[in-house]
Image (cartoon, rainbow, N blue to C red; front, side, top):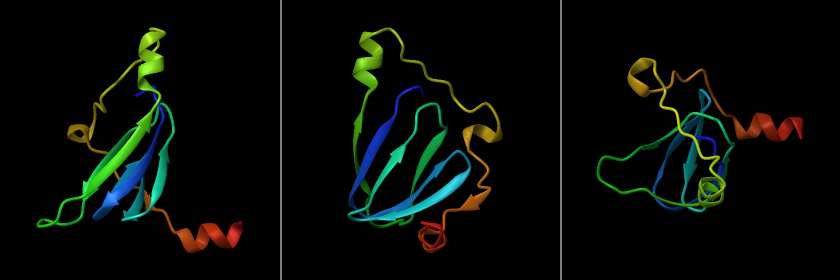
Length: 94
């Protein structure tokens, strides 16, 4: 999708794959999906729900006639996870 989004995890735990990188999340976390990036959300529990609240710029892009969406054409629409984001490693570089 051409839009970008900010997500807040209201409840539950899971992961989001963004451009082939897996980001694990839990209640209280906030994360961003950059524009033109394939992404998918995963609920890690079979018995508990995961609730994500998002704020997106989709309405603005649609009003300007600039909204586009393209499904991933390979791997039945699912991304291949190339790596898992390591927050400790990222903070060490900070």
